[in-house]
Length: 447
Ligand code: UDP
Image 1 (cartoon, rainbow, N blue to C red):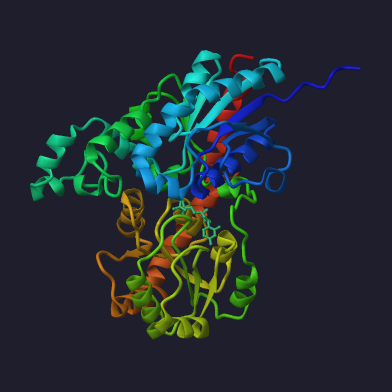
Image 2 (cartoon, rainbow, N blue to C red):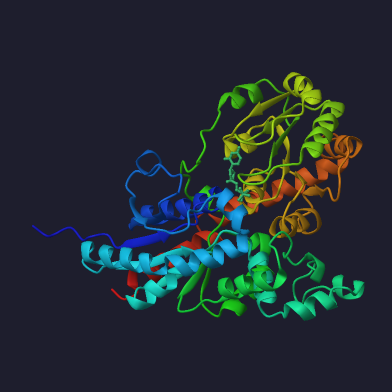
């Protein structure tokens, strides 16, 4: 009897925070469906329960000296944390791969790693395994990192004192101006630029996968391709191609029952993603503004976040519904949801567009601000709230989005984008074709 051909193995190395794990696991699922075996390499402190969420995936542990957690990153500052992590973990990852090669009879088709974890490249090079960079942010953000990687921190800071230069559009990247470059929230610029250089350095990688679609940012993808000089595979949105249960927190489905009894397109869904949280003063203004708007709202307040201020908590429980963690994609797909008050993380942005839901943008850091700029000014499917917000502004923003003609226009444009985004992952679509190109490459390379 003929021996059944072994599936080729792909090693995935995700950065173990929610917004990075989810798309990497979706990629793993998509490649698994195309006939590859999947091994996920994670540090010891990762929060994932493997057997429960990802049947069929093999999990291996990279012994690590720095546990990846939000509190650890806050203690060091994200930039120093990432630089240190990459320096200290390289040797133990090599050891993991060497063990795996022995087990797998030397057949690893590729190592695909989160772009924050560039230490993986050293093992790939040593064992002559092809490697591919995986980016969980937008192509525009990747291009901005390349632009930043070429700057001199001292000169840039002096240049930025000139308002004309602040407002100058970055070459080929309209509407992004120099003041929009995502540098805030990462500590001293000089150190951040060191990290940008590391992340933008493709080393010996043979390609870059990015969770975006050409209908969203075709010119940024062209620029990214030029900057990287290796094949770029835009496969997004991966959450449509392959759904996985990758929530690190338990989803509270009771909100779906609550949504079921709300009027169509009436509810504002509020979530700041998996890391960030609003200041108490802002929570109070947002709650009061939502209350004044008389629109129902569903609010995610994660475990460990500051509790709702006492003066608004009774009103919130009467007019709204609070959960610790929502089944977000299902919520956004629900007919009762009319708008998404979001911090504009890239996953949330794509999930919202993929359901045609317009947004109120309240970004915290640089990358989110870039996404918000695109949501408001390029795709014109949302309202950006800047600086301090007060309740009257919140009420007006909610009415503009849910009640006024302005919001109806945004919803119409969001629905057009929804169609395009969904078409991109169907047969003949750009992301669908890109995935097949990647699979062909992985199946033929170095067999
Ligand atoms: N999410 C969720 N339930 C929630 C809040 C968020 O499932 O109650 C998911 C959301 O669907 C998205 C991810 O968490 O996939 C957040 O990623 P994003 O890139 O938007 O933000 P980050 O958490 O990285 O800041």
